[in-house]
Length: 308
Image 1 (tube, rainbow, N blue to C red):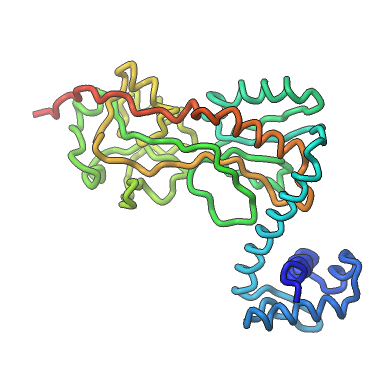
Image 2: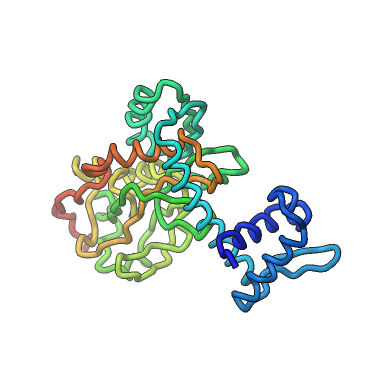
């Protein structure tokens, strides 16, 4: 049994929701599709699909196997397309989505230089902290920061982003300083809406914090921190300048918080477009010498003492 061929048949059956439609799109007899799927299930020792004369549904094992097959087949197609398309010039409209603060700070110049190098490409940028469904909303690529959920999307890591804990002097004078990670439970914390699991250290310790303000944008939380409304855990690319100017004080400097990966993410495709491939390669070249947001934390200034 050709396992790659069988995996391809399995993915096509799931995508088409029909053995007949899959056979038609693959240009092979329906009986061959059924035989390959049966051979694959026998090889794996597991049923991938529950099927009757009228319905077909993935089993739990089948769903997990399908997701892996999609990624494997996409990687193979991407490798083959990259070789075959080395001399192909990218063209057309490239639709990109990225987080608001990150996009404003770091993508404008990169996109402008990409447009200069590739005059046949137009770029549409959408900055939004919401996790966009790339396929349903018609985007070619996303820049995402943080832990990526397991999915059939392809991800290329382009860097990491450090986060630090900080607060204004006004807040610390009023509420005192946190003495350790656990003591943050007693503080007013400014919470990021998409950080649903809580705050996590690099060692894996997780803390569910509370606070009156919840926002889906880091700049809004920064303004709240500057106004003295609480403790903020935020990437350095958002709070770094405020720390350097002394408007915020870094807290618990001995605690290292979980690093967030910065990724270029795009849907799997049987023929990855040249515009996506060239943009990802361009971004990787731009940040090869060190990403501009990948900064060392600013020096720790003397924090105000807690009120008596």
